Structures are given as structure tokens and as C-alpha cells.
Amino acid sequence: MLSLSGTSATRTNFASSIAGSPVCMATGPDGNLYFLSRTNSAVYKITYSNSGMPAITNQPQSITIAQGNTASFSVTATGAAPLTYQWKKNGVNISGATNATYEIQSVAFADSGNYSVVVSNASGSVTSNNATLKVTAPNTIPIAEINTPAAGATYAGGDVISFSGSGTDSEDGMLGASAFNWYILFHHGIHTHPGPAVSSGVTSGSFTIPNTGETSTDVFYRLYLVVTDSKGAKDTTYTDILPRTSVITLNTNPPGLQVTLDGQPFAAPVTVTSVEGVLRTIGVVTAQGSYTFSNWSQGGNAAQTLATPVNDATYTANFTQNQNVTLTPLADAFVQNGSYAGTNYGKDTSLIVKASTVNGYTRTSYLQFSLGTLSNNITSAKLRIYGRNAENTTSISLSSYGVDNDAWTETGITFNNAPAASTTALSSAAVNNQARYYELDVTNYVKTQYTTDKKVSFLIKSPTNQNKKLVFNSRENARNQPQLIIVSAANRSNNTSNELPIVAADNFAESLKDVKIPVVYPNPTEKRFNIRFPANYEGRFLLDIVNEAGIVYNLGEPRISAGGSNINIDISKFSLQPGVYFLRINSNERHNQIKLAIK
Image 1 (cartoon, one colour):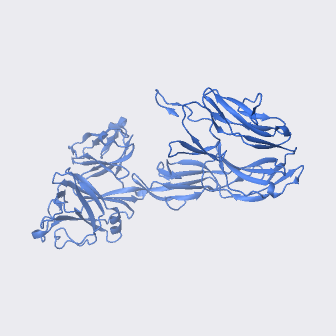
Image 2 (cartoon, one colour; image 1 turned 90 degrees about the horizontal axis):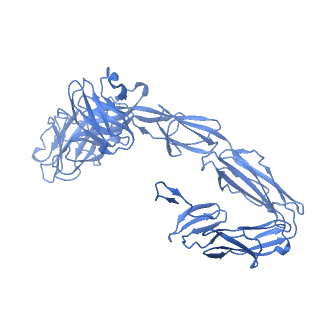
Image 3 (cartoon, one colour; image 1 turned 120 degrees about the horizontal axis):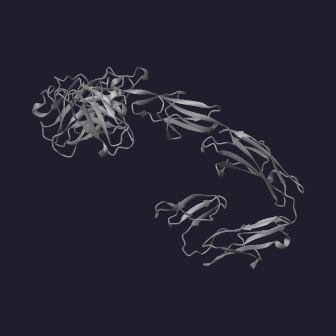
């Protein structure tokens, strides 16, 4: 029990003297705590009592002992201290038997009977159950011996272990199979679990070592043999079977990316010692910042299960660095129904979207992009359009749809001849009255279109008749044109990514001598950072931060003066979690991406 009332937590026992090997604690519908005792093969209940009365948690057990051997009874109890004990035989106090354990040295037939104990304290007393002592004729204890596996035997996961043994007794001679009882305990650290099931009533047999389950190496199997002679005397022996181990190393290329081992993430390299033959599941986080998983050095899927090899082994996950490409439209236009259904608006500076029940007021917009210069390993595609809703309402829904027919032209498309679009939306967004870029995920559709004609067309519209207008910039607008941002996995040795270097703040001035691109400092940061724009940057730039899950945080749209500027960005309002993010700096002419670490 933890007490948090003081300046620091203090720990005290919640329940004491509980039954041995407690497992599987659970709260019952009555509010009490229950647990299983493997030692006693019983279910126990922990209840609260403020009376301090003694309570017996482990009763004394009946035993059968041959004449001349030692008999022992014990009890465990709880209650307000001090506790006193008084053992009884057949209801009569035994002089001097006042401990929790009572032993009778060299028992005789006269010692047979029922034994109990009274546990007392200042609050009261409780009497245990009777435990019967049965004394038999003198008998020599038999001798149990395990012949195989031999001492020092080892195992790997999946091995079949053969065992055999013998039992002899001075009175009975060689004991038959019916006198044999075998069992196995799996030792893990300082505790044990039941091991594989083995048959009793046999002098030999076999069992299979599991290759799943516990992955630690502080483990071994202990094989027990108990032989019982005709008069009930027993002898127990055991032998240990120890694990053979090897070392597994998980690496990444490039180094330092994330891998998973048995479902848990680690930064590579990670090295573990494992029991040979035991199955381990390795995997990767497939997309990590600007890197995408390519393959494992040994082949196979991104997530795979391998048997721990006999010899040490290294498995390397190879990644390719992503190439970010920002495309502007080949063509874009909106179309309008009603009396304007034959009118072309291809040269308008806006793309208008409106769904209306009134004929002549519905508008939808079309955009077309060329994909011909991209890598064929596309991992992400985001359609970005800049604008807002013109109704000053909280939000209006917007959806994107695929258009398979790319034959339309910007100066020829009208409502009457506009190509049909898919009826299933690719993705949706909520557009509010803040003018900014809104993103629509079109990854799967772009991948499909790339394999056909290297072009892609989209329809954007409101999915319901909301009678609300959305206005976005077209490619004819002077700034903030539509974009299709493609992330594809490029060969690392031929990488053309525009990810920028990280420059230390303490060497900032020196590092800017030959820099022709923006620099972020301090990096890592916590709540604020600066962006230093070189002299060759001028105009208005859209700034945002993207996390690895693709969530975008808009930072505004500052205007950069000729000759360079240094701006300060406050990110405390976003409550960003620590990790790696990407700062995107975009204008009509320039597109940069900088890795930003948040601490």
C-alpha cells in the first residue's frame, strides 16, 4: 500500500502472511480482493477488518509419517501483534508448543491423533482446523534417481527432451512404474511457473520445450522425480536443464531509426540475448520522418517472426529517404450549373465550391496535375488548396473525388461537358473562415493513376446542399496556388530531398556565410524558435509544422523583406508532444522542409 499523505510516498504491507505463490489477484463483485494460491491449490479472499482479531490464512495439514521420523505442523495467521500460539493434541494443550510451527522428533505410534492450534491476541482468539498425524511402521525412505537427461543438460526452444529414472527401496527392491511421479517447474528469475506436462506412472518419457512465451534468459527447467514405496514413504530428486543463448542485434540503415522487438519500440541499434529457438517478432515503424522502410537484410515482411539462431546474428532494416515534390496544377477551373452551365471559368483567379438546392447556384471545381517526373514509389500524396469559407460560419465540409477522364482542358471545361467523378470521396476536410491551406489525403488514388497515364484529376465539392460558398485560389492567382505534395521513397545515394541542415545556435553567424536557404535555431527547441531567411529570400511564405502522423499546425504567413529577415515563432499554444516534426516553408517559387526536434 502506498500512502501519499506526506511529502513523499511511503510503502506498507497491505496484507501479510498470505498463502504461498499468490497469483491472479482480482476484485470480486462484493468489493473484496481474491487471489489464487498455487501452493495450496485454493482460492483466497482478502477482507478488511479493523478489529485486530487474529485470522488463520494457512491451516495445518494432515501428514502420514513412518515411526522414528520427524513430524511437523505449521500455521500462518494475521491480526494485531503480538500473536501467541498454543498447540493442542486431541483438544488438550501441549506443554511448550507455543510457536507457529510444532515439531515432533522421532515420532512413535502414541503420537498419532488430531492436532490444532489456538492463535490469540488482545482482541480475541481463533482455533485452526484439525490436522491428523498418522504414524506407520518403521520404513526406510526409497531412493529416486534421474538417469537422463544428465547433469548439465541444455536446451533450445522447440527441443524434445527425453527423460528416464529409477527408484529403489530396501524393503520393496526396484520400484515399478506406478511408484513414479514426474513434474516440471519453469524457473524465471526468483519465481517459478508450471512447466510442460509430463506423464506419471512411467519410468521414461519425453516433453517438448516451448518456443514461445517468456523471452528472458534468466530461466531454466527443473525436472522432478518423486518415487513412493509401498508404505507411502517418498523420495524426491531433480535435475536442471539450462538454456543455450545467442545474441540478436537489430540495426537500421541509416542508423538510429526505430525498430520493434516483440511489439516494443526501440531506437536502433538494440542488442538482446535470447534463448536459442525461441520465437522473436521483429518489425519497424514503416514511416519515420523523411524515411520509409524498404527491406530487411534477411528478406521477409516488415514484421516477421524468427527463431533465435544458434549463432549470434544481426538483422538490419534498410530505409530509403523520401523525396518531397510539390506540384502545381496543369489546369484548374470551377463550373456552374443553371444558366451558366455552358460558361467556362478556367481563367478565373478563384476556385469556387457551393452546393445549393437552387438551380444556378451550385459550383464545383476541377484540378489536374502531371505525375510524369515522380519516383514510382509514392508513399504519400496531399492535395492542398488555399482559401476559406465565405459565409463566416464555423465550418463547411469539403470532399475530394477522383476523375479518371483527364481529357478536359482548362479553357474548355463547362458544367455541361465536365467529366464524371467517382461517387466515393477520397477524403474530406472542414473549411472554416480562416484563410489558409486545407489538406486532402489523396494518396491511394494518386498511386493508382501514376501506373496508368501519369496524370491525375480531382473534383472538389461540398458533399451536401449547405448553400454555403467556399472560395479557394486557382493557379491564376498571384500567390498560394493549389499544390499536390508528393512524398516518394528515393534512393539514398541519389537523394534530392530539400530537407535542410540543422545549424547550431552557438556557431550561427559563421554557419550563415555561405547558406542560401533558411536556418532554424535553436534546434532542438521547447516553446520558441527562430527562422533566419537569407538575402535571396523575399515575399510571403506559408509556414506550418507537420508531425509524423501527418497532423498540420499552421504557423502563419509572414512577409520576408529583401535582404533577409529573422523571425521568431511561438509554438507553446499547440502543446506539442516531444518528438521529431517537419517545418515546411512554402511560397509560389520556393519549398523547403526542415527537421525540427521538440524537447
